[in-house]
Amino acid sequence: MRILIAVLLLGTMMAWAADGKLTTEERAKAIKYLKDSQKEFLDAVEKVSDAQWNYKQSPERWSVGETAEHIALSEGLIFGAVQGALQSPANPEAEAKTKGKAEFLEKILVDRSRKASAPEAIVPTGKTRAEIMKLFKDARAKTMKFAEETQLPLKDHTLEHPMPVFNTLNAYQWLIYVPLHNLRHNLQIAEVKASEGYPK
Image (cartoon, rainbow, N blue to C red):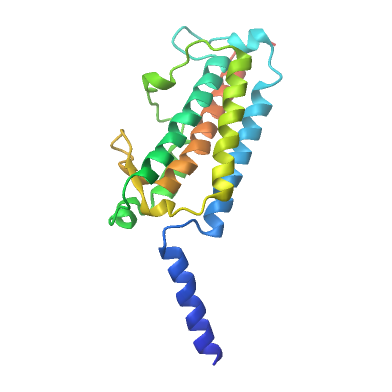
């Protein structure tokens, strides 16, 4: 009887895992990434002086403020990809096309040795510090609420990434892309702050 119950429970757990919804572990991971990346970002920028906020190592490098603006602008754009994936029909090849992509994102996005050019929509335009911080906090609150509450089958819906290295990502992978991208640029802020000419 115990064996039968165990088999039935295993079958039920497999059904839950196969319905495209987030597992408890996946949801917890997404929320932790969102909280950790937000804390790290806010700790890095909230006490910098105006001189530190605007300092650039060279004309082609971003300042702390410009990097912060890029992070804030990116939050909405990437979360838009989550919504875009969910608005598309369920992809019958989702599992095959996205297998291992979460782990790939976790590895590649925080690797600052790989450089990338930002799309025009998320290139800094000179917003004020107050505008940037409000934009970031409002967008992150929206992303966090979604991560905590969604019951949608995120892993059944996909959206293509414009860069071939990523190809097809499901909505859950787009969701963790938000904080992983944040962490990547937190590292960029740390690089600016560690540079020789950074104001004390």
